Length: 308
Image (cartoon, rainbow, N blue to C red; front, top):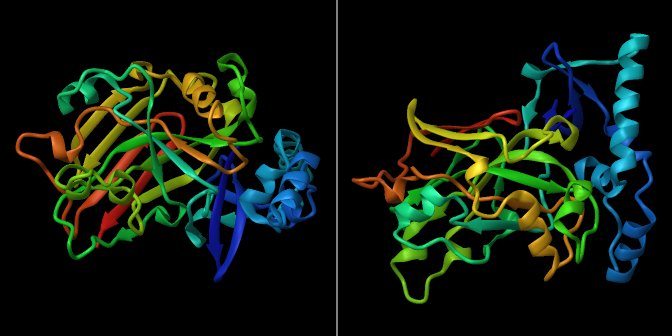
């Protein structure tokens, strides 16, 4: 399934895309779905309530809810009772508009590590992007007035579907809800030109995590290491890579992270970018107002947005 978060007539919703480029609204169905007992207990222990609705509620309801949703969608289509919305009638939002956390992986492709002038890491390089940096597809991302080295990185992003801690790499697929496309934008001057480097700050300004256009459920991506990752800037090819070139594959990354932190439903892991981002080109090509970006992960989707 391709599951999208959107605005329609000024109201947020969640819908499943059908083959005829329409959406079946499922927000009401999600609100009636119970979160898992594990989620309820963890929320209670933290003094918070589970999500009342939306994509996060669906993910908190666990893999069984995704399976039940697929059956619900099929039943609605077969009976002809589905109330469909044209995709052109909605404004897509980030699939998970406010993840609990976004964990980015630095220099996870051999060609990108090479162009940055460093040897491949022995262990994953972990970087945080703050949840407030999330932006919707189609957004014109404002460049902060003091930033002159605004950069892009096309990435496959993994969306977590269950609480996961101390898991083995072979067990990782069961904790993944699905995948989306993410642009790991950076203000390079804060990452490279100051001491000490401010990498999390460089990557967490407002809008610096455009994400979308939807969540593709795990069953539609049998092998996350068999995908192309590409980026175009104003129609010019900038990045072309393949997830088989990751130094640390998806299963390895998720297992590694789970050794140190609990991954939760709705968390996003941005898995790194191939060579070709602006800072490492000769000459560098930083983003400017009016630029248009297209980022694509095969089998997942196309994320487009601009720079204001």
